Image (cartoon, rainbow, N blue to C red; front, side, top):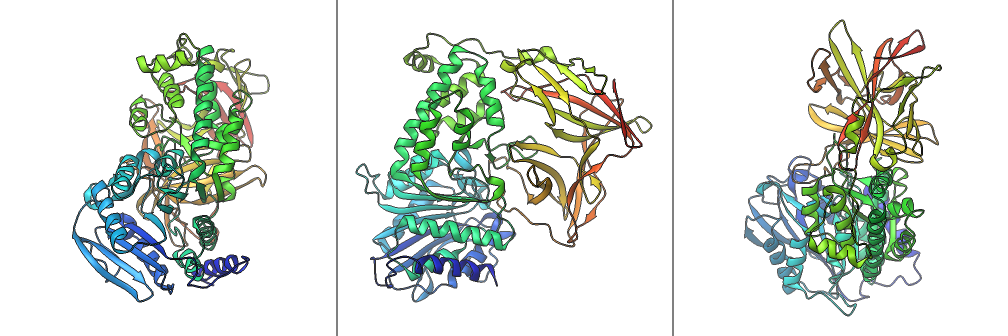
Length: 640
């Protein structure tokens, strides 16, 4: 059974289970305004053409209309769409018809979006209207609709708001002009996106995480609407979620999929709770400068989306509900966030390796970049958190910020322990009688460190080379006393017996997530790999390209296929040099149906571990090295 048919059957089952089925003539008229920015997803993979084909599998009743604008791709993988111009199509009970062409323009431009929406409203009004964006997404900062014809120009949130404002007046009475706004794009289920849409639409459908290449199932959800046009935005949003997840299961991409329906009428209450949450965090930092580092450690253990590692790049998006749950012991206001979030997120679906997803994400500066925060502050919500992060990243606030702090009852902010970690550079290690390496920093570490883990190297003196195997957090950590002990077991990650470079990207209670740089059929990718503590097994979720310089997250989570050529990337440097490791292609693996990720016993030899200490600004220092010599199944420890 194809994924289209399976999803369609699921949708129909949902509809017929309702108490009032209705006929195609019920419920007035529906119009879907589909902003289809093809980008490289279409020019290289034909993903937009696939979704257009899914739409054409649906026979629409007379009271449902789909209005489409195409653009943004250097070529289209069909014989209908012309990449040299903007085209407007209408799909009705009479079929698909080209109704207008416009000169080429950036789909990431305010006027391009506003022009299409005005055209659609003027020519194809309806009782209930949805706007659907199709493309790459980049979260709160990157926006959506990256046009490959115009240097990947995208629609930022303020540009979306301006375009909508040219067509509709934001509602103050709770009767917005749109029934639903959807993003068939990555990372757009954020509180910031919900905020800019709250006066325009009843509901928002979007994903916190990146979306796999299969994306939404248009046969499924549009077919459901065709069968029951009387449904409202909430029911349509639920069908979108369920058919999406059914399609992901059909394509084996459901493990880290997310999609949610946000009731935008409840967003003000959530934002008020979020503001109080940030104010309490700022007050805590005002009393204790070490709070910022402790909060950063909570964020490191919070589910985050789109990458947020040095290998993949940073989207700086983190699950709001999970962050609140992590903070409840120190910030009581987090409970109100969870309560408001539960009321605001009307429906959600998520895979087992996005189990902490609560439906909406928020900003956290994982990269420690003050310039990035300034860019976010132009569109972000939550005054308290903006000042909290500004203080944490720069150690100071402007006059407006200081006045805000005083309004919270804080006369002055303490000096942050900026560069406090520098004194631990080349910190010495001790070796216990049991052969364990111990780093002792003292209680001060609790106030200065956002993260502690280790880097592991293979050392070969004969060839004057050192290979970096990656990073992990498999340590025994005593934060109260600042004592950290290794748990080296002489094993490391591998694919089909080939050791790989792997970088920890998420540290959870139920699973850890890693990224593994590879060349996949001569293209750069990062494998997404999970270790499940309950099942005690490794899973390859798929291959994904990282965050672009424009903030665009790679949409396609590509599944490995038999016959693929997979080359792990190692990082190698000379022992006699202080230069950073350089990427080096390892042996190429031909993927088969038995290809798997697993831990392997490291070959006999010398392995060097250094403890990495990182502060909230993403600055790092490293301890002195410890050497583990693996020989005939035994491990011998010495300090270099």
